[in-house]
Image 1: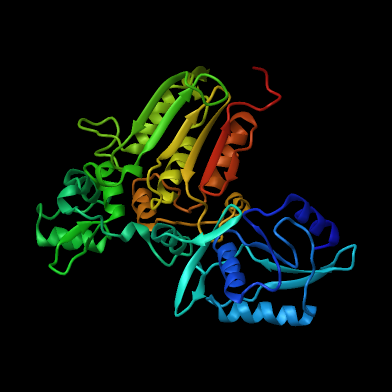
Image 2: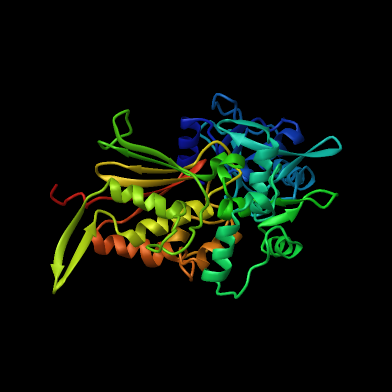
Length: 415
């Protein structure tokens, strides 16, 4: 950091990644700020700066201040960290200590020592507070140390799973020759082995897991209200009350049977695609002797984006579905939760593979929904949109959501 960058930080004030502190603060308070920033996206703590941005300067020798910061980070933060330290002198000769915390913090949640216990602290805007149990679970999930999808869902049993879909998966999709009888011990053990169910109580009761309900649940929304897709088609370029269609799509992710066959029941992905077909325009042209339909957005791209949103979203965030929004000039798919762990937008573009919910990915891959190489963004979404209309998909990461935006046409194209 240089003096100009420091001046800009002081000018704009505290934010989610920037904290002002005097250097006579208590070690546990400094440790709390360190842990909270690491649990979000990293950032800076400026020591020797008042809350209003006024520089008061370090009150101790810079070398002593460095030793104090490092000791605090090692003794009062778990797991221990070593932040980057530097000092900068401002115009009046006062010295500011800059504590820089990396955004690449793989060992979340970071905890701060409070008496004899360790507490998870998080950053909310310009404030730092204790994490709730749900927020702490999300941090464990981001680091890959907790698989939310393996959790038992209270009040469920294997009877809440759709055995028709399970039988179809094993027999039609996987090609097995037989399927265990309903409610048999063999079936329960099979579901446990696949992490679709788990023994959740001491009396041996078998509950469906989060992943089991999402994939094969009879009514997953009964237990997991956040399991669906909210699909809205707006008339213009911005959200508004005037909509062409507004639908909440609920049900299991997987279909029953193959498309076009008698008795076929689509899963959420196919139903979301049907919503797009109803609310976008197709044109037809002859290529040789064959009639070819051209949709406003390539089907293969849409399926990839929708499946990614459903397979990789953070299901520990309750009360919000995946959001599918169609505007007159674009289509957006918004997924609750940040990208997991160290995944970045640049990493996605270059083919970085990740899976927040590995069981979902594995089974959706069996159905052919997921790119076998796990690089659908790089190999499908980006090149197919370039080929389709010369546009680049936009990938937007915000604090609590991730959005993929597909443009209907290039900005210099005729209307």
